[in-house]
Image (cartoon, rainbow, N blue to C red):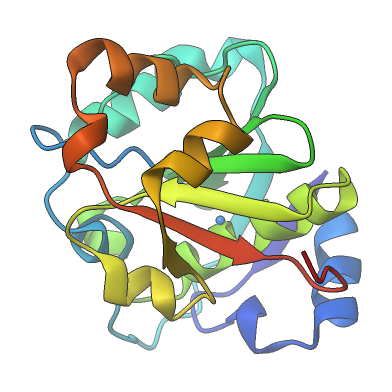
Length: 203
């Protein structure tokens, strides 16, 4: 499925049910690859009506995703592994301009590899990708969505994420590629974890 939007739409402004309905018809934070998630997703608003489509990625998109992540200085390690889903934002020429991914566990998902090309930032595409991923996680039965971010907490707080202990994320998603990768690299002790409760959940 694809979602079509202009560069001035922001699906996070919709009510939860309306946003989920629209989406049915959004992060890799490493010390060497990311910096600020704000700089890879965008925060300002620009006026432009060029159409943008968001669709779920397939295995055939692996190289396109890796190339896009490389262009925005994000790691492509572990993309499209078993138990994950990714979405691409594409312009009117079907050129990939943004991406976001989820790694699934039991009742939880890890948001990763979220970014938008510099020339497309500030147009709500990052927000649309986040909304897509959150709605998919909820539709897939997740109660929580987690992510790692050491330098962009305020950005993710805008989308309802709260800081939680890293151990909570690890326990919720012990088999996640990113969790195991960070553990192997010895990065978990200096990481910061964030969690978003999905609508309708209380735990």
